[in-house]
Length: 102
Image (tube, rainbow, N blue to C red; front, side, top):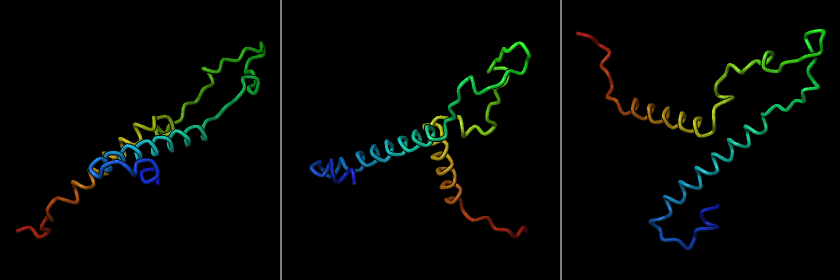
């Protein structure tokens, strides 16, 4: 829709490149919105002190997520998906293997 709305007057040979750019930007925007929606915001006052002295060190109690997809950038996620897609295409293009051994 964006291609038709904003670039209808462009020459036909420029449309594929413009479409790829629009698709890329929309994909990155989607990933950014998802990352923002999943972000966890907390006040330091929400944490209780473990020691009796009242000192609380957030870094000592921080547990990082074990799933790297939660912390990687949208660009890395997109690049990984593109690599997997390319690998699948290459595997599909391989000739069939004869299962019968002589």
